[in-house]
Image 1: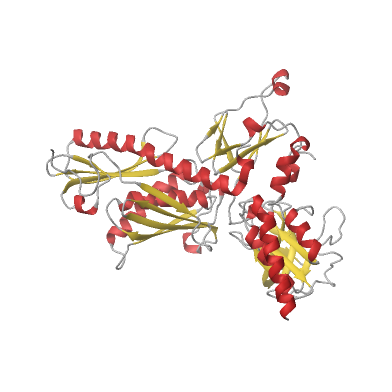
Image 2 (image 1 turned 30 degrees about the vertical axis):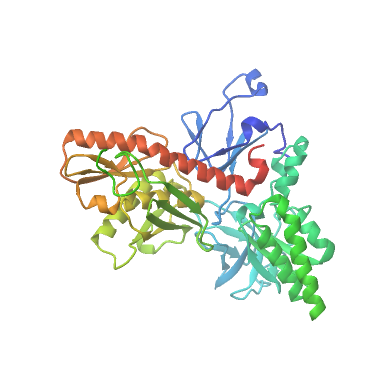
Length: 271
Length: 230
């Protein structure tokens, strides 16, 4: 909960467009301290002569008193370190695989970046196979690098090749989790943002669906979602719900899910 | 009482046609916008940052490509000029250094042309870049005006009015500075006429910027739900 703090709803949540300046008003905690105001700037913002300037459209968010970022939506993925992503292998290149993760440049996945992999015991991935991995290197001047192990434990931890199932695309905002960014006393807002964060296991879309269908889900922050279930009809139902809920108002989500579940029941009856 | 100055329903020489825009129309592009100004409408789609051709690759910044397609017919030198004006104007606003060795492609398709197509296309491109989530320093907005044979300044002329133009002027202003970002003027005109065109366009661009803000805010509000205003 590093990001959880006293967020100020009035000052911290505001719709901005590129070019808007944000006057930095130091809060009481910072004013009492000596020394210059320290601000951490996240995505969508830039510093310009002591002011913050928005470079993307979205909602300005603030946490921990001094962390600012813009919450907007886009379709194109820009790699960021430690993001979990879904990619397809496009080529084998000696010591590494070339993986398409939807970014401007293809990513490299080393054959040694798998659980228990050695030069002798190398993973066997074919061109076209789907991998769930984590970005270990993401720098604008370098090619992105992937790994299929959790660096803390050295175990696969859910990463690796995904067999079977189906992949659908969704917006980056839907895929991303916002829970850590919201403060505990702002629960109502947390519940609304939860609707959009598929990565969160308590996500209402996932929880409501799980009551009637058993399925597996792997969410990549590059806007790709892998779904697997016992029957094709169930996979299609989950895929349709995810695509319908993307960008839908929070109040419509229950209706959309129920509509899709009813269609699934009808399909099951006729077959 | 007085003779009609404008070729359409407008009454004043310094009156703009109604304009509006709708975003996220295309499912496959990263950002898309249709911008309408009267009967002129342009559809813009933006891809990027994406893979760049080796030939166009720049090591320290993104390459901005602009493709301008007329409503009908092949691409002529006029379209190439428009592409260049739009590219050079937008390059000043896009933070290209954030995405080195990649491409940002802007495709503009004219749907209907009724004058002022360059400024309409530029406004469509600006909004499509915002829709695609590409980092921008500011929002450039364009306005066209003309001076007819009698020396009357007409703002946002239609294609009928442009036929009687002695000179036409397109100015681009952004939302963070007071000066013009770019300007294209053709025909013969005096210094005074030029300054009055500049001033007219500068005051008219506020309405375009207002539309930019309201349309972007509307989109963010739709996506975020009640959380955006909380």
